[in-house]
Image (cartoon, rainbow, N blue to C red; front, side, top):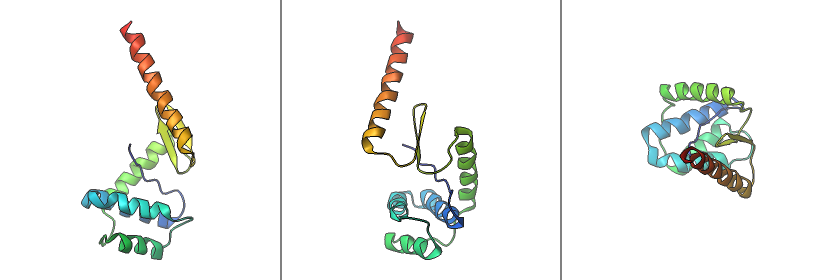
Length: 126
């Protein structure tokens, strides 16, 4: 699985995405707990909620890295090329699934993509 933070909401969306990427760069073992904390909040983040997420996860950062902005710009370019218009968006094989979907739908998409890959490799072998 690959996560690509995409700041689609407000300026604080960019701030939280950059901080998460900076944690990935500098403290990769802490990334998942920050990501989960940030994603658990309903609605937009503000500076206080971002600071609280960092505090509750015990992560100390002074500011986002410059590389995080470069990564965000790359992610946004890729998202535009793929037709992503919001988050969450999940790419399974060649299928783009927009929005939050039930586990069963994701499972079916993964199984379908794996079956298609298997069928394609069988056809090449024949």
